[in-house]
Image 1 (cartoon, rainbow, N blue to C red):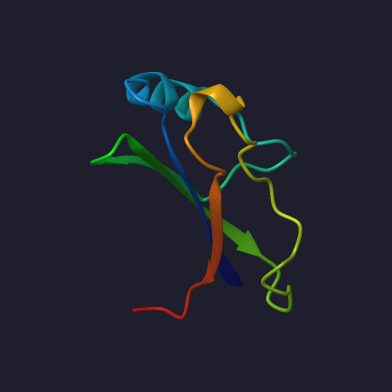
Image 2 (cartoon, one colour; image 1 turned 120 degrees about the vertical axis):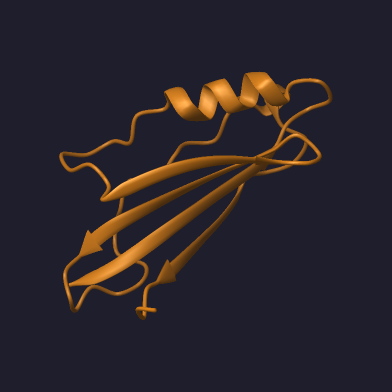
Length: 91
């Protein structure tokens, strides 16, 4: 088993941090399977971060198709969403 973590981070438009947080928390992930884990964080500057952990087949490439959060409405953010993928190598 390979655990892949998807990281989604956005910065809200001025004064819209709580709205971006609520939007991100309400977003379902498309597809038949749920992530192993999902956590949502906030940071200064009205940033919202969502991490999801997925059980991927052992030989799956890091860019394998996995459900990701969509982009919010352009007026809700100050810049494009940042996305990264990480493969776990244990502790």
